[in-house]
Figure 1 (cartoon, rainbow, N blue to C red):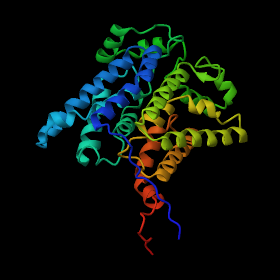
Figure 2 (figure 1 turned 180 degrees about the vertical axis):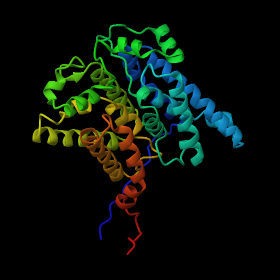
Figure 3 (figure 1 turned 135 degrees about the vertical axis):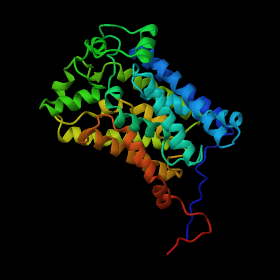
Figure 4 (figure 1 turned 90 degrees about the vertical axis):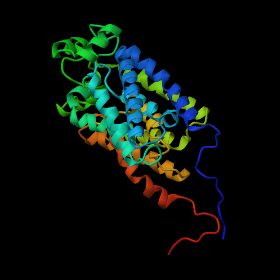
Length: 350
């Protein structure tokens, strides 16, 4: 009987957790810079607010649990969670959106399960889904990106809007160059257009799009793709999950587009819109909540890509990554159980 010998699924790196988390945070900088360029300084404000809330919440919980505060906070996991939440929140969302979401992520999703390494759901995505369901208006009000907005939003205007609030008329004024109604992203614009009987080409002819891609979102996804490739180069993550997500989403979107080009979005728009590259490299690859075996990571990533395509195409939410990641988190233990390689010298159970 032939046996296949394979290494363990863990990363071959001597980096400690705090160094690893810090490097991942640094790799998000290209995407954060792109978001600030297209959506204003509010993106940076949301990130800073979420990181501060995450660190303070984790410190409070650790103190209540009689755990070492300084040592645990140095692992930078709370800061990374806050960073990811801040990146996912609209730039001019009220300040309490970031605070509520981050407290929920750290307190409920992470610490109530025992802290880092014990949570079964991705904290950032669980918080995003909670916010999206609880506060849909605030979570779907994005300003028009640079080049389409009537009013470019500076740091002072962003601070005033985030912490003091803005009237619906002001929000619409910011958005008027792109859309006169509340639409979150180009993916949402396409879904709304299809529901009114328009074709994909007619939807892409709207001012929300440029050269077949959503204004700004193409470059934001390219920036996160660059950051993701840097993580692969630094061996901070394994390639299987990210590549499986991108390949499966591209494949299913291509099949749908070939079958019905008038009602199905093309594969490139799927890959370079919404949170595709951010989720593929920085969120789905969370080592705590993802599958751990080599084949398991491929199945895990493929499942996420399939779920994203199905929800984006047939579901009610335009960008489905948060839901797809959480559903895949539920399946991760079963995926590893059925696809993990058998240890040498052990027989399979009958």
